[in-house]
Length: 229
Image (tube, rainbow, N blue to C red; front, side):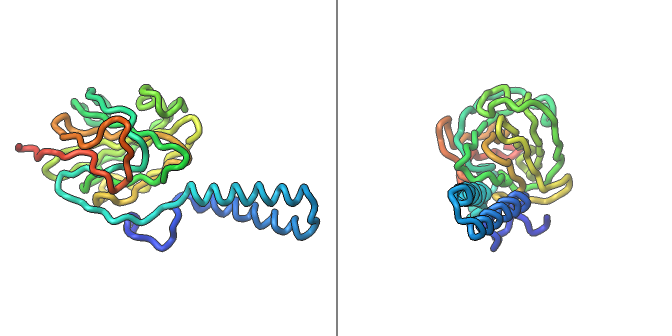
């Protein structure tokens, strides 16, 4: 995954190739049947296959973006709407007081996740769980998720959670412990609508509020203070 996160000629998300291939074959089959039989059933199948193929292409789109990285500036970990900002104790990964920002991704959002802040990946862990509606607060702890801890020199550790939902049953993370990552770099994918949680130090200056729309790798989420400040 050394090159993943840079501008790419292929405009679709890594991890979506198999699904795109399946629906392309389905569409090709529908076209073949249409030319073979040219009846209402074949026509209906063709229309349905074409609609599903376009929907899948739209869902797996992965546009290149110009990243404006700055020291300590946390960027959006994905596209979506901020649904909660709260202070809490994160006992499992960070074992510290944190600010948790939760964002909900609907079916129309780009579902590729991006690294919020440059640093080093300390941990990537998959946790099986439930598939509650992703916008429910308890989904952060009870649903299936992938947690990723990154450490940025001078700014400490942050946690990013890709959380499965009632429709999204699979999260993908392409990184591993020890990887060095850059702000805005692509790192994963959630298939269909779901949720991303970002856990930041309690001293973080939040730059978004509930209801704001976030664009992954573009929207400034928070400004972190250096550890000695």
